Amino acid sequence: MSDRAIPEETHAMASPATDEPPAVMLACHDLTRVYREGPQDVTVLDGLSLEVRAGERVAVVGSSGSGKTTLLNLLGGLDRPTRGDVRIAGESLLELGSAELGHFRNRRIGFVYQFHHLLAEFTALENVALPLIVRGLRKKAAESRARELLAKVGMAPRADHKPGELSGGERQRVAIARALVTDPSLVLMDEPTGNLDQTTAASILALMDELARTTACAFVVVTHDPALAAHQDRVLKLDGGQLSEQRTGG
Ligand SMILES: Nc1ncnc2c1ncn2[C@@H]1O[C@H](COP(=O)(O)OP(=O)(O)OP(=O)(O)O)[C@@H](O)[C@H]1O
Figure (cartoon, protein in one colour):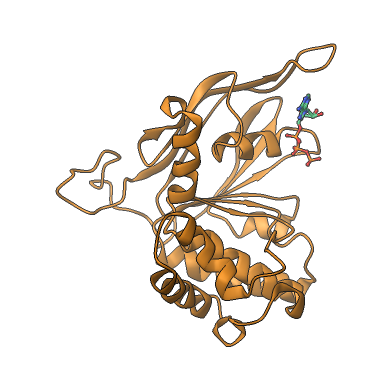
């Protein structure tokens, strides 16, 4: 583990008297997803378990069709498991109804995809402020917090620009700011550097290093890119519906 390691005594179910984040931010147990839509059942995830600690970054690698997107969808509450459970910051997704799940996602989970999914009609600032406005924050407070995050990703000078006026790497920085603006417990990234050139991808990696040092959230990064995977604390391979440890960070 790196210098982001959380002391052992900071336990998962931390005392309500402290503001300490739980040591285990993400815990999956017996996670199973069987697709029954086609002529044949397809078991994609087969009882896998996973724990990711606060401040820890985990890469998930695996061949095409091994179930990485399926896993991310379950971790992000976008799909329900056939069996098993996902707990984020001690809270079970299984126990949440769909409205509660939407609310939980907005509060606790940040998403970053290969393609940034920013809204074209809105400025960088408005895009980053949006999750807070959805959450019920007033525009002024939301934009003030959004400015802080844009500064953190080096995009403060471009706050008033629309996505179409930004480069690919700049858009991805804005997308990362948007994912982090709600102080999530878990950030899920799907090929976050996938459509970027090497130099821009390297600057996004450096940004991720910096953010991981300064936030307590857990990061799960799905990627085919060995350089991006090697940058994380642990690399897990998804194969045959199970995760196995490929490398533990030092
Ligand atoms: N809705 C669905 N119904 C039936 N089968 C599905 C469904 N969604 C995914 N699958 C199957 O589940 C398996 C895993 O798909 P998934 O998209 O999770 O893989 P992946 O590892 O993300 O692949 P890639 O790296 O190519 O994006 C595949 O065999 C896919 O065909």
